[in-house]
Length: 198
Length: 278
Image (cartoon, rainbow over all chains, first blue to last red; front, side, top):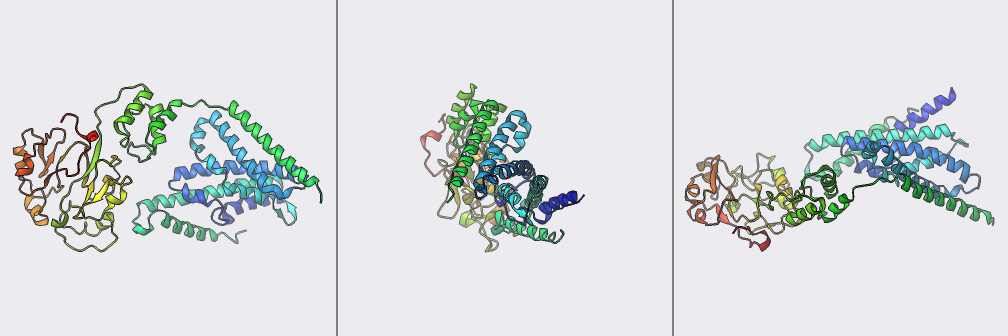
């Protein structure tokens, strides 16, 4: 029972309180770059959820069964990047062959995620110890999935705002990216309201 | 110092790298998806300007549409006839000859003669100026000379003449229509590249109103319509309009026009865009 409660807490924390984009400021490049319309933001978000969950699973095994036994934990960044890059390539190929429709929806965003710092962030946070204890496998996966969901929520919200901004009467010097930055900061402040919830 | 840690790190990362490499190499064979080679070929002959004149988001998408969707081969405006021919050769179809090269033209010669109602001191941009009561000019159809079209042009095809009016240089114009979209007054229209006589006014107001607002405006007197030997000029809502396909450059309309809004193109035409029949 305690376990389920903790898992739910982790999920809620990564989605809302410690939102990867709006609280940790990871993955800001796609946040500004791909948030011009809701459809592509959603596509990107789905791809990130997929890759983050998969990354959480694979890097957990790599870390605990490869790096820890050989006492080379200090190589985690290089190992994680290698793993993520190879994984995304592999997944892209498999999806292209087996599910062309899904590839059309995710395809152009998958390569973008390869070097996304938010994905690396999931792996790095998962390896961190919590009160001297390693996070369990399930908790790591939930954290990865939750981070992806949080990313998607922030992306879609931002895309919705920017779609409205496109038709709004914005002063010429603020048009485009400047007003998007202002909207992003306001959104981040709004998400600050969730802090202290857990 | 423990040497084994160096050995382990090299071994573990090396093995990881080799494993991933092999896995990717194998899976690229297993999951190989044959793609249409014509997409690449078509993409190569396109100018890669990504101007969007064809209606697709970039040259790559247009190449895909041509190769897969059977899209028309002559939609690339910057590439013109040459690109259309090479694309048609790759796709094994004939070029539809009905589309000829077009260039943008700015249909206003008001300049200093257009009466200013007020002095506009806001953001120097046409789209900003029209928000303030339709712009500073009395003429609702006139060029405000704030250069939204000049700023929109990516190909250096618009220059500013001595009166401050923007003028399209047909040699540089790729017909991407960026200026057409940028103009809030809809003064810029596309014309065949070889056309050389233009009625440079866009005002559909009554003759007297035009006279009040601008000394260089079409007052709808229909003199040019009557004098034209090939019936190339007709009236549209009080505005004389030339059909460039019919015009034979006799220049009679220029002589007869009382307000001198009909002009022959002043910039020299290069041979490649000269009309084939003339």
